[in-house]
Length: 496
Image (cartoon, rainbow, N blue to C red):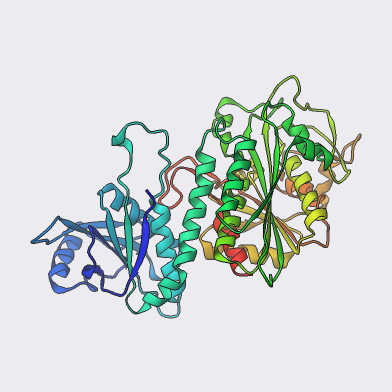
């Protein structure tokens, strides 16, 4: 069940709810904002538990209820006041939502926290709290048959916004669409690869397009051969599942710019003949996370009426081993005409993106391109499991993407594209090799992609290999597919 969000101008404890959430900065008392009766109980429990309001700390206090069912107040720590920001608020609201769910609360009231002086205004504060609460309740439970393992759904959140209620109502649609986009992306990533095949993903994109003002075009094997997408087709040829390329278009009136979003959609990656280990293959249903993020973000941008024309292009394949699979040493001819010697069949994502980027370059001719891909383990080594690498050929577009990431609470970090590293991609028998040496693998992958966009065409590459799939539980992102980059892409389009 999808939780609903409402806005109220009432004080927190005046709202009919099962659980009440109060956000507390470190050193503040959770009792200060409460009426006398509740304040005494909260103050006593905070003293007994030595609650300080530290980041991630939750104080649970039963509230006096002379009539009706028992109620509970959750005081959630935000940490130091100087660290107050959207990311911290999203995490705290998500943690509160998950705790409320564990308490089987059906209706949850959330106080709108007051930002420190000179800090954020009410709009980003309200949006962060609402997004955190809505995203925090996500669970992928489709295959759980034991009711005891299913979460008790929160039916309704109510934000006690006080005088800021009109502002909160204005940003509610954006918060709801971000939450819905992340749920869509996460559902696609969490489904087994036997369910989300290239054709099934394409059908889901068509269904999503019908729910938003989007035009959908799907290219199958015949059209892909006509488009001369030799690299994409080569990756797909080892599988019985035929490839697809999906092109969605959102075209508002008086658009400020034409933005192309390109997603890697390898619905399962065995590594091909350079086969992965069993452990390395276990989560490879997530190798289409870039395409999932692009689809989800484009739907949200269309539904929110973003001021930019958006073209979403997703290359969808399986990379498997068979008698027909492409092999190390093969030479492929890409759509752009460049030839590529294959020295690693597990570096397939860049081949799919190469043809997709050239399709965008010639068919769409956008003002800006952002591609999203779980591209390299090297990026995870460099930045860890929670941050995406950002590379590109245009500093202004890189800055836009990084600003969108900060606003949406996603961790992204810029990485360089040194021309000297192109030497690693030289082949003796073709224009390029598909991988370089051992060191700087995230950068040589970015340089490979740069060969398929115009030098004068603003382009940014997001390597989301680290944050796309969470192996440990996280308050906001949960466990499994995270929807990484979708929120940033939405913010990028809305803020253009």
